[in-house]
Amino acid sequence: MRIFNRPDRDRALGVAASILLGFAHLAIPASVEVAWAQAYPSRPITMIVPFPAGGPTDAVARIIAERMRVSLDQPIVIENVVGASGSIAVGRVVRAAPDGYTLGFGTWSTHVVNGAILSLPYDLLADLKPVALVSDSPMVIVGRKTLPAGNLNELVAWLKSDPGKALNGTPGVATAAALAGVLFQDKTATRFQTVPYRGVGPAMQDLVAGRIDLMFDLVADAMPQLRAGTIKAYAVLSPRRVSAAPEVATVDESGLRGLYVSSWQGIWVPKDTADAVIAALNHAVMDALGDQAVRQRLLDFAQEIPPRERQTPQALGALQRAEIEKWWPIIKNAGIKAD
Image (cartoon, rainbow, N blue to C red; front, side, top):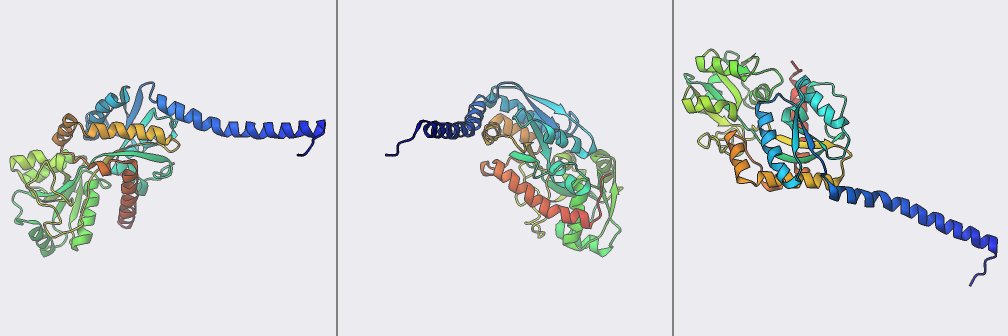
């Protein structure tokens, strides 16, 4: 046994105390974070929606938020922040405190497309963490009622018979409809003229009137006219038939495999949000999507509900990365810019 004189003993005790104090400092943040996460949430949560109140994205966000409060035992207040194609709203989420009290509801356009058409002051992947994929809104190829083509193969042949003559209506140059048209032309080696409108409504009116020939539209937007028989459907741009229009074949079934375009929707939080908080939010979303009343309301809006394995934060992150890798080169090669 080593015998310390008093000065040596005091120095040894001081070193030991410093080491123990250091370990204590390392342990405190973890214990505080766990305790804080267990108490979350203790006050109302804000969900920022990047589009106006009353629109389809706002409606889906409100349906989910209303049911999430049951699991979280706190209300979720919707705040509509519009402008700059939704990029202002996403920026608000990026800059918010990472405490789980500010959520961002976003779409394929705000969390994929905007990164290719806008100079953003943030990184869509690095500055946000995914919470859950909420819903998927596939697109459908529709044509005027008098179009001679009876199916998708005939439509492609008709377009090839007179390149550049057909008119395709879109609600804007950087929208899902416009990008679907670009991808369709690339995959089929066809060419047509694209006519941008100020919204889906005016474009659909001209399609019904026969002033344009076709549109790539969200199933939700096209359903009223399809049900009325004023336009015809050629295929949904999805690997599976959609619940809102099960009679419409998929592009795979119609011979154009892999032409998938949809405007999916999800929830994100600031990048430094604790994993335990994200887990609590994800649990609330999954509970909401498992509720039959919520599912029916989403189906009424022609939304496809992802299976549970695709509702995880990891699945949403993987989808976002895959979509960026797919669409950014297409958008940039086509020279598409924001309106």
